[in-house]
Image 1 (spheres, rainbow, N blue to C red):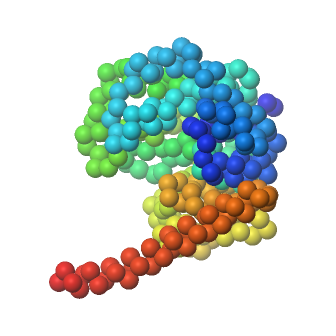
Image 2: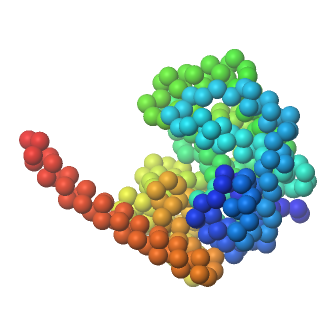
Image 3: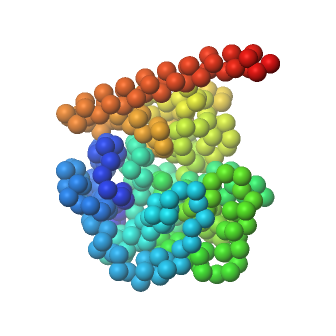
Length: 315
């Protein structure tokens, strides 16, 4: 089968080589779709594709016209978060891939794509969907680790266009924006609405099967269920056995992690969790990650000490 692992990244970031190498350690071919190729050329990756190659596609041009901004994040940031799925579809279509595993550039992959496909029995699409009630307006699912066929990816891109062009979906987006107490409208909102429409076809990568799962966000004990895993310093507790990462659920059962999502400030953990081979770059950024991790832990401990003192002073 013609399968690939693809990352899409806007410009260059210090941690990008780590996630590429970690995925490469378990897989054959890693492709990076990006812009500003002069900076990206320093990376060691099997294939680099310039995103501008696909910028004239019909769907991309149409969505840029349709997009309206309902987010506290910047316009350009949120627009790119949507556009990456159109870029990915154009790439999958051009190379006629059977399956593509997409990972965010802050997602450390610890498994082989064929093994993931065998474990999860994916026929259409798979991504990360926490358990939630529609009435809460949480409306969140994520493609930070996601598996697609050409058909499902085209369906999703068409759905994004529908979400920003059909009145019924525009009303839903505005309803969520007006009733949600945090965040705004992003591609995770549309992922959730797409899941509701295609639920019977979509595999949830957060489900635990054969003591195996993927990480929604290392910064939380939540995964599919709220407070599902043990934490240390407010991040999921991770330990390695024979090079394989595990979480501990609330009953202290070992659950293998197919990947770890070092989202936001936890990107500093990437060099510490990395298993993709060592070189000068590794040692340089391992030191960087270690220093910032110590800083993070120090701030955490200080906050813990000051919290009861503040309560006393307020009283």
